[in-house]
Length: 389
Image 1 (cartoon, rainbow, N blue to C red):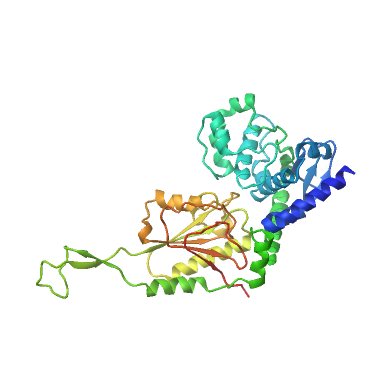
Image 2: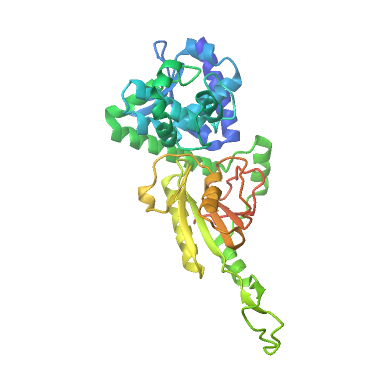
């Protein structure tokens, strides 16, 4: 039967996701699959019978996504919409012209994190070139929505994507019981995140993951290491004519010395949608504990696809992916000096592979045990938090 073949292909995609990005694979496996010949889209997500479902029109699915890569791409695409809570955030938008803007904005946000190709995959660079507008990379869907809204008429006449089936008709189902749907989605994400941490798999291929599991990850008191490093760092001085030489004060031809500007610590706390509530609270507690331990200026920020003042973890910025580039762009924009800035990033490691640090070299990445940093060649060092007992 057609549904049996699709089920086999979905299971194959789930296994690959479990190896490449365990968190996404865990979410996919938790979605109840419903096959509906009358479904409007080839594949969609909806909230029904107290659960989140992956709804598939078998004939449309096979015709639209004929290869294993296509299937992996569109399933990852749907999972990311759930991770960033797009059905909850935008399900109330009426089915009119605004819906097209929402669909495009959310697709632009998630597709940049989907490596596999599939029909209807639209990316900011190509779309911006088509409409002659400026669209930043790895931005949140809300930012894309606001940038695209002035082009509403153009989108209506020319189409926002190459595949008009990507209209996410199932999102509106979450509004029939919005509170219940939101709680069910949060529970789904938290369970997937917990099991992903227990499994200890990150974003590496299977061979790399097995090597990490075989050798284990050394967990350390990263705050103690960071504090001791600052204590034992030799004080750096530079010569100046504005002071006398203390050893030979009567030699006015000899310069004196002054202590270089004190190094300040900037801590970024990951609060993106992939961070469950427990881990978010721990990240904040770790950051605040570091601030108490270090003498000097310690600045705390939260981030997902943008940077925010660190708020109460119970009042997190809703949704958003993880964009490390935004951190270093913020440091540059705010005129931090790379020579005198120590950067600490508390994260689950799931972000982009390439980052321009704008010459910031004193960087410490802090991850939960057994997680893997997505950045292929990270500047600085990677430390791991101790396992809570």
